[in-house]
Length: 105
Image (cartoon, rainbow, N blue to C red; front, top):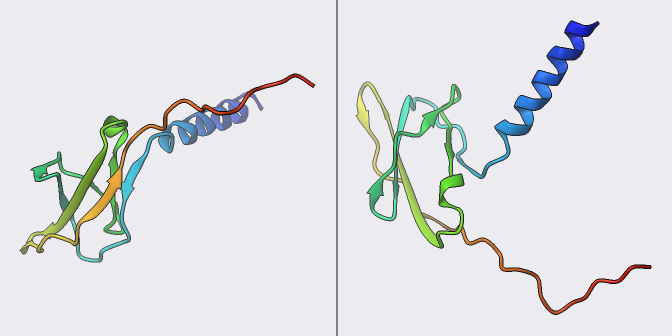
């Protein structure tokens, strides 16, 4: 019983940390074995190509850095595709709330 509880606790801890950060993900792309991501004109480290051909790239380090444009190209043993259409996103962190008060009831 203790082993089952320990395994369950480990699974829950992993699941909580695995999805905690913002991720750039894509739909599956059959035939893709690797990806190159370009952000704001510069190449990012190679994105992880999931088994179904989708992208999964951790974007936590870009929090609070403003507007960005991302493009990707897929590759396999035969070569590389053209770049995708650009994806625009804003990584700003919201400011502190203002204009309201708190009360204890």
